[in-house]
Image 1 (tube, rainbow, N blue to C red):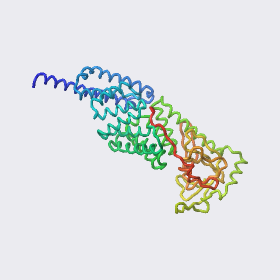
Image 2: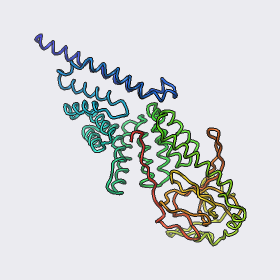
Image 3: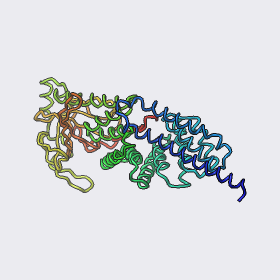
Image 4: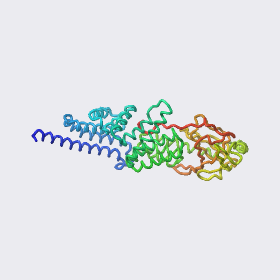
Amino acid sequence: MSGEEISTEKKCCVRQEAIDTLNEKLNELYIYRDHYFERHSLDKAGQKNDDVENEMKNTLNCFESLKGMYESAEQENRTMYLYLKGRALNVMPQHSKEAEEVLSRAVKLDPKLVEAWNELGECYWKKDNFEEAKNCFSGALLHARNKVSLRNLSMILRQEKVASAQQRSDNIEKGVAYAKEAVQLDPNDGTSWAVLGNAYLSSFFTLSQNPQVLKSCISAYQQAEKDIVARSNPDLHYNKAIALKYEEEYELALESFSRAQALDPTWEAPKQKEKQLVKYLDSVQELLSLKGKLKGKKLQQMVQSIEPRQLGPYGGGSYTTRNETVQLEPIILKKLHSGINLEKVVLGKVVCSVHNDDAVPFTFCLVDKEETCMAVTVYNLAQGKGVIIGDSVAIPEPYLTEVHFKYKQKEWNFYSLRVESPVVLVVNGRKVGRDQQASAQLSTFKRTE
């Protein structure tokens, strides 16, 4: 072997050692970011981004000190240098033009470098260029099935603009499938579980209002929380709170909104959602205690006007639909038990509706002939539809929930009936038509969207 060949080999070894060192520094940077709250208390959350940026600058100094070595290096090492530098620049939540440029050079040098495609996709995503981001993640999957591309595609598909409701539905279904595959590739990755939870949540509102989908969503978030990296992400707690709110697990929802705030004090959405939920619960409790603020005489007249004929098709002890007959016994609200009340039907009058900033669910207060008053939450009600004061409402096989808990010097204690779809209701003696049913819509899962 000639002296020149030995010299070249030594240079290659030195470059590889330097790459290993840079990779180590990069891993330390991401561990610092992702495990920040293992080393810092939550009251330091407001300075996390500044601290991470300082760590990024220190890491980039290492790259600069080796820049000359890699400008003349062989393609493989030069590509890896560019990829690692681009990933370092990409550690912050905001878009980095330099990261985009460096990563673009890396994928040109090695179009099969999956990790670089994923990082470049993240760059485009940060500046809302969904189409280019999608191309990067899809391209990476052509070279290797990997969890990062899969879960990012799951999110992108939910966010991109669509031409039709059918295309949106198709995207949601694909998003669930991609997220499931990401979890299967690495069941211990909490970020993939969180993305699967988001996919289920979107599916619940867009495709099917099956309560089991919502339970799967919350279960995925709980799996995500087992991972310290995912658990430190305020997005997870915010999205989990949204799901819990629709599950009417109000105490857990408020705690999750609070956790999201603690992890990112600059993020307004969880603060706003927490305030809105507290205000909503206050309104429900107050209006129930005052029976909709109706005066004594008017309330008496309303109660006295409740008649069996207002049960409509639910009267007569049974109801038949699609060749199936269900026994239905009219009972008063006080005789309901927690959970579903099979083969029972309740009847009452609407004494008020409750304002809700989110519009979902539609909430009203129902009083029966014994003047017992309960909240009724109706999901999937078309915009502009609903009931008004004085309407009679019959609810078959009602699902009863007791809301009783304390939170930040406040206490709530009331009963609520949950109605998954308005089409099961009988209003003023008539069954509600399917034209009054609609899906709720969610729009955001990430702080940066």
